[in-house]
Amino acid sequence: MADRLPVIVFDVNETLSDMTPLARRFADVGAPEHLAALWFSSVLRDGFALTAAGSQQPFAAIATGVLRTLFSGLDLTRDTDAAIEHVVQGFGELGTHPDVVAGVRALHEAGFRLVTLSNGAARVAEGLLTRAGIRDRFERLLSVEDAGAWKPAHAAYAHAADTCGVDLSDTLLVAVHPWDLDGAARAGMATAYVDRTGAPYPAHLTAPTHTVAALPDLVDRLV
Amino acid sequence: MADRLPVIVFDVNETLSDMTPLARRFADVGAPEHLAALWFSSVLRDGFALTAAGSQQPFAAIATGVLRTLFSGLDLTRDTDAAIEHVVQGFGELGTHPDVVAGVRALHEAGFRLVTLSNGAARVAEGLLTRAGIRDRFERLLSVEDAGAWKPAHAAYAHAADTCGVDLSDTLLVAVHPWDLDGAARAGMATAYVDRTGAPYPAHLTAPTHTVAALPDLVDRLV
Image (cartoon, rainbow over all chains, first blue to last red; front, top):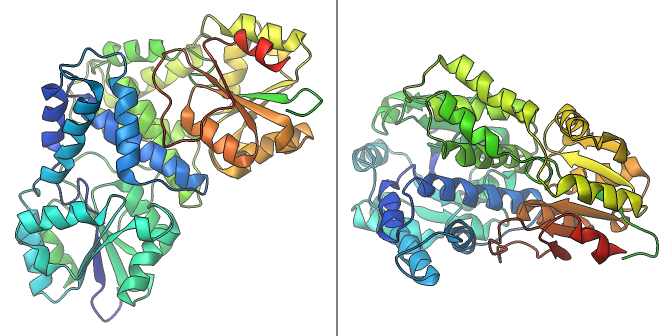
């Protein structure tokens, strides 16, 4: 770590937001709740596929397209467009995990610059952090829509560092997703894995610099 | 389509092989069968993430790593390593979809050169096609392990064309996965979507050149 404090770059979906309520929205429309995890995984799969092929689409467009495929052939309680709309709207009403508010405040009060970098739209992070009362702790809310590539491509992380006016080596990514921590590490960032589940970190992806069970624990690691 | 017949490049997992029996292997070890779809989607997600970040790992390493994460916290009927082994071994015992043998024979007899290109190991395709009695119809069984990048990166498709001694514009990819057809189209290939489920083709990915419900239908489209 450099002498000065790193700029802390937070992933948003699942790292700051608790996506659990989305599963209930699948049940609301007559679909199995377990499809929520498959949906999110498949959205990332297609987003990364486009990235690997040198292209890009908005997160919301992929989220909608994958839902339409997953809902095909199911006996839903409302028409497909309304069911898709109901699930997708859930993204705009999520709350933060219980450790997030205290962790963000502590990092901010310790003097760190805080930003977000999401594969989704910046307005999703804006709503989430505003509802949680911690929007003012963040300097910028960034989206890969302005980077030309989704995470975990190098260009996405470079966009965050460039926008903050620092080198990648002076930034640290906070995420719950090993694929994100791997990409950030390959781009030259330090990384912090928020491990809320205790699942083993996959051996096929670069191990994180720091591992914490909850966000407030990160302050002691970094200061 | 060029005057001469295109070289037909087949995807393997799910396009030629019927992966349905893998779900039963999850049940065998005490895990929910619906995890099979999440597993495959997550393996592709991590493989594509590494591709987008400029790296690569063998399919089998990612398959094992993702299973270890998915099995964490479950009350399995055998120890985790044995459960992982049981599921992964299933890849080596799959059969082909009912339309594959007739389709491959018809395409071969119509004079097409046939190869496979898999994100998995070539030995998986070797076993699958040998068990189905159609190994001799294929000129080569290719893996992205020799391409430097997974599909849907351009380099993977270029490896297949280069190995066959033709331009990408003289090749056609056959697959059930829209992300694969999208990448192949971006690389300059013609594409054929084998749509066995009737699910809508996602609007966020490049539409295929041809769509068929079963492989034998492709012969009429191409000749």
